[in-house]
Image 1 (cartoon, rainbow, N blue to C red):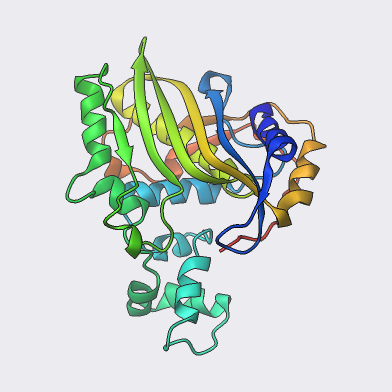
Image 2: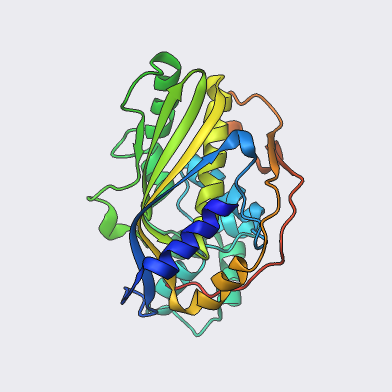
Length: 288
């Protein structure tokens, strides 16, 4: 997937070193755009193994309107664990539990999970209940009725709720566009962690595009990914350089195995990835 490798090259060559909220430090470049025609295949990065299970379950979690990590934890997905664990470890109730012990409590103690697994009004809340508005369902209905609308927008950026979120939305706004029977989607991402986050975001929003196209009886067009602060954390420089030395494999295919009639009926088993060839996984620490 050359688009992703070109993003890495641009940031390494043209970016500047910046301090950041986490204290890790980044090389940052402002304003970058990638385009992925889904007719060319499903844009899942091949220069390292990407955990598709996490991507699908996280997207279903968003679509459900859920904001508690229990659903993710119960399905073996741990990409959001660090933020509630940090909050718990700074509380008076913390008893020195390790991350693993914290996760076991989330799994097995519903009351504990309700209190300490909640991330606040993050993505799912905003998509499905933005001050009482079900943005995602409204947009799907609007695409069916008025496909030429220029107002097919879902916003995760709700200033009123941001102080109560564990992490303000990085992928903050997306817009659908219909032309010649094809549905396209553009994401505006205010902040993008290129090594860990961006591969997930590309695949997640491409899959969201496929889901909405399926529901609306349209073909898939292009996923356009616009990033504000595109950055590589300084502790990920080695990892991205390894990827630059790897030749990308052909893109896989993603199959949705049914006609989707309701967002509430979606499950992990509705999706099948075919022909995914990739290089081995590369580990990297999350900056919290």
